[in-house]
Length: 384
Image 1: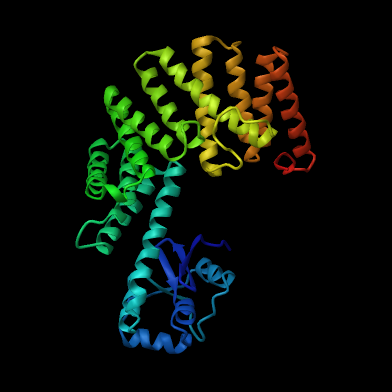
Image 2 (image 1 turned 90 degrees about the vertical axis):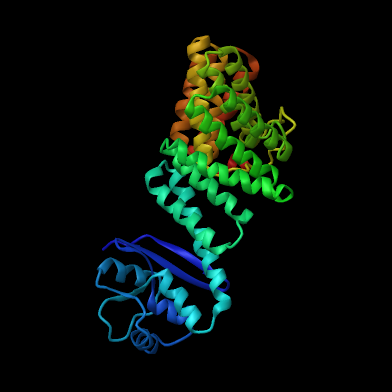
């Protein structure tokens, strides 16, 4: 019997769970009665029937098993599990004169929808992410009415990104236009990170449309705002340089493309050699820890591998900078615990370097030593 996926739902000091069933996402009545309303499940069930509230009785063994695993109290004398939609829980809060809980409840639902949409897009599941993002926009517009509020800005960006992932340029542009209007409406409340995100999405949209000049302008603005917020040599700024390199590559301007890729490599080699090998940084950025998460770091590996392919094509497979991209990829993979892939990248780097110079040989040996220690069961040694 399988356990169904679920979402942990926090409402102040109250914790609930939304179980993901084949009919949608639902709260379990016994948990709602106990944790949210502090009532006996049997009495609460009678009141639900009397009030004609919408509910679903599930006989699914998976639903019952999941509820049991999560420690939800059983429903005495009941067959199956009674499930409540978010709309029903909200109605109950209003009817039971707990209207002060309605706004936090809606905000929590909105947060979960936003997180799910972002998670699906990170996994490349844009078809699944789009309806979730659009639902988040709908929830936000209802929550922050009557006047459009800056809180809608990240929701519009989510919807724009989901449409962009499906190459729906017109819909993407519409949502970016809404986000831009909010930013213009409240310039003092719009920070550099928000401006960077907006510029980056505009750049990606223009690149999709083949509008290279506009894309270069938008990505340059992205770099500017990131540099203002984090510094020009921070890893979070590097994506802007990479996006600029891709536009120049599309235009056949390989020298400029390679130059921006060099900047990306400079940033990431310094950051990872500092974090993994405990080397002195070669940039002004302070990389005492990594400001982005695992999924983004795996995207960084894909970016570095793309740079590697371009360098091979433009400079030849024996070019030392090709080995550098393999080596830095290995450092990122070591950092996220992907030791098998890290070993492959180190081998590829070693095949290019072949004792080319003392510094590269020293770094290579240090990386191999760390990898061997990890493989021997000391996974955190390089972070000491």
